[in-house]
Image 1 (cartoon, rainbow, N blue to C red):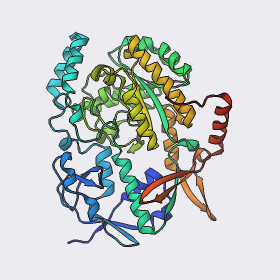
Image 2: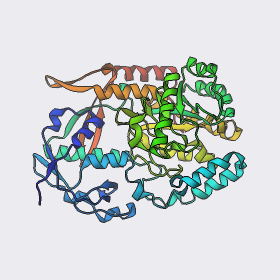
Image 3: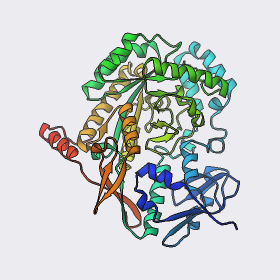
Image 4: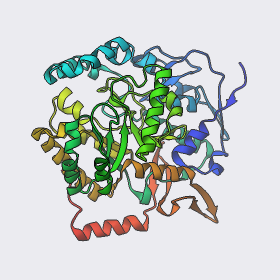
Length: 479
């Protein structure tokens, strides 16, 4: 057998945690020579991976447990030897490189250009009830999809924790410092976004901003720049003057953005033109279509087109993480909660049940809680009543748990600042240096009973905010 090679997985771990190099240099991580075959395998009891694995791969995610790579991990106190490349697997999941093998036969609409073209051609002539019946038919198998996991998939986050655990065990230390994920020691981040689909939704924007403001929410509005409706300058100014954000939503939302590379580049150039025209920083593709390997053409700062788990999206898959991540120089802010349209019109669920379940899971993992709701669908009294209940729940949750409620642009700026920060030893202590470091908090990953837990140093800002909330009587019980 050939000698193992050094794995660049440290780069992924460093970007995720901002762990100091001093710690990473303690362990040499190598990867056994890998076969050419790519497929699904398991690492530990719950992590389905996709890539090359020396111990074997399965053709389907449902059979991944046949090959558990955790049994082949080796090494002594100063080394760690893996049967797969950590960085390769992370990229394959985040960029959805597993999709050709993992979603075969499950997305006829998204995968077949002729069917998609025909649908969008006749869509405006179909009664709404007919469109919804067709969509329900398309999504009828969503509960049977084994991977990614519903209602939230944490595979990428689990793998980072497992890799860090292995390094801690091999190094003989039980704790390592890192830069906490969110500013001022916040346990999570909440982000509300609104995609404007029609002229009716555009005209309802002002009322929706009133509603959001009444609960202390500042959201972003993604607006279609061509064909669907007019975008008056006064409309753009009205959004921004109230502290909300204005972003670009596709080009014309016809389902053909990623049809083929040459046409994509033509459309991407027009999208980039609208990014400049409106001085926008963010983008979301229509119907959550995406092809992350083509993002090098785009000129915006952040994207919001990749779901965590896409069982209820036309294009199945998911990035399997609840944390922002970079695709080249573009920051991806994944959608981590079900869309309002999916709940109301596909599942016919007008309750907070699914949302509350997803929120609880994401909060346990300190992740990004990102929503898409549509002014077009919230015009309806029944749907709007559910949204009001959601806003009330979020307001209580944010106040009680000191969650950071932010716009996408604020998350983008923070995550870029955090990426530029580093931990510098100062005697027996660690100092965070870099842009925006006054908002950053030192944390420790601690090995506790064979698992990694986090300890966060509470910032003076967080303590003051909690004290002010108690004085104002804002901290109440979340139902």
